[in-house]
Length: 87
Image (cartoon, rainbow, N blue to C red):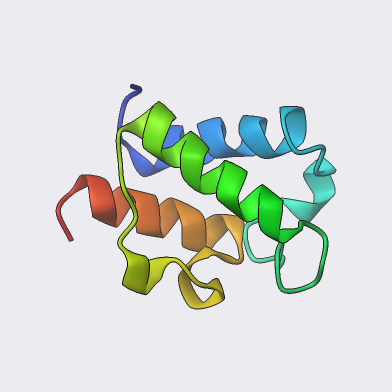
């Protein structure tokens, strides 16, 4: 488990997307859609949820496991941060 600041969450997720899922860094500016554009596939979504659970010790609620919350790096960081802070 790592530090829970939004900056650290962003850094860890950025490295994960680049190193593990092969996303080019220029697509991780924060607001670029990752899943709805097809840049990442549904299996990548499952891998991302598993990474979040294992790395941050956070389970994202089912109601937030959709593109409204988890399609961009910004959205993922915010959702993980909220989950870790009990929101």
